[in-house]
Length: 584
Image (tube, rainbow, N blue to C red):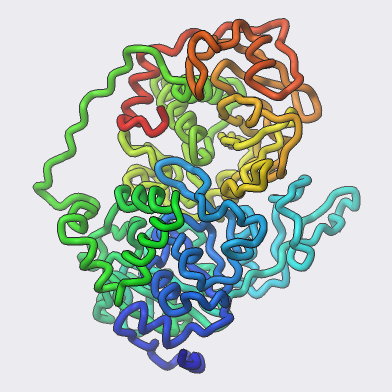
């Protein structure tokens, strides 16, 4: 391994590498803290090169907002000693644990330091702005996310009100930031297109600078004509290379800049990764085929094949036939999952009408499906509510047929594209009219949420933006009831329940007047078969449902209302959104 060169002066052009592997081998060294910048287009070509160069070293610290999809190569390569992140698992087609991380809480396959998405971004911002600390409204209430952070998270008295507490976060300063953009010039100015996720903060936070890959390096005059599109300035860029499809299997939005085509998430590839990781042998085989046994990024692109590359182009080239979908059929009985999503949507829509919320922050999972359906039901009645997703999509009009929360198809149909700070900060934490819609792996009678650890010690996923949302705005939780999910006590407290007023199950809605008061079942719809229960096994009546399908000792309201049966219209809308039945 060569010793990393000194950082060039601001008047020196960046090193122009032949590809990601050349760039990584020139600048990254064992023991480094390397940051993978998290837009919706993570620098996956550069991460693959890191895995190849440092395989088996167990030496690197990697920070990135989430470890999923092809980033599982970090675990399979053995290159990493520690990961600083907010999510470790899978996101497509729905959020779920990944077998690779069953023992993550015990430090295998690497040590992990977990944050919420906004607090993580705020730490980068503090470093980028040259500040000794960031303040955050996240993790202020009691949460296990605070554990093990004595040197980087500090609870101090509020200077204007000693009875209150302020949370201070130490800056997050990697040595190098990896970034994938649309285009760059040879001087090192890098262009990217929103939504930008964490944005360019890591580029300024990195003590030494940025290693950038782009779809194409273009003439200086091309970039000079669009200075408003430059996200990372040349002065911060140490090295640069071309890497077409450098974000694959994730997507890249280009806006058609410099004639560069954008591309969609490769859902088939993502599905193959999830399937492969279910078994150690197939996971190792996937890694060898797509990362370890690949000579270069050019070889990787060649292995994808021309047909696959063409199928991912977005927007589709002129003359490409539109995909024809069979109209959704809303007839027949709903599944348990569908009934849950519909009841969740009804609850969200009712709360918007009653309390005047103007924004729904949709957490990934059944929660975002309920939020999307609620927005459609409200729009049908002439009520407009804005739907947002944490990576920077605001005022979304999700495209029917694509259930992935962070699809570029939805980005194209959003009224605003920004980043984490503007969304989880401006549209959520600073907005008293925002309603969070969340899911839960475990939820207790105080509505505290666990999305981190199972009782047997197995890893779930982590917080993502859930703690940020639950810490700052009113929330609805949408989660299938079972004794293992609705529990008397949590294994791990990921997100506080102080702002949760409503919890929606597949058989009705639990509500409470406010924090510290008890939940009651206030609406009822007989459950349908699901999760191993036949029609004969279903509880009869609301009291029996609470007793048999939850571990909560809560009552049934004396003013219990009957929910109407799921309608054909509701099912048609939902199945139009999810024609493949990922949430069925």
